[in-house]
Image (cartoon, rainbow, N blue to C red; front, side, top):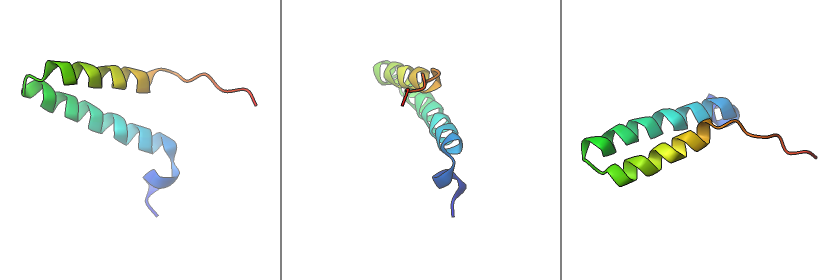
Length: 54
């Protein structure tokens, strides 16, 4: 069993790493709009979540 399938922290960390890498590729191709949108997605991912009351 793949650890990333069972551990949401690992899955989020992998997603973050891939998003940062993609942002670098977009910046290298001068696709500023897409790189900016991806940065906003990264910022959203890093924003602490508020627990939902049950």
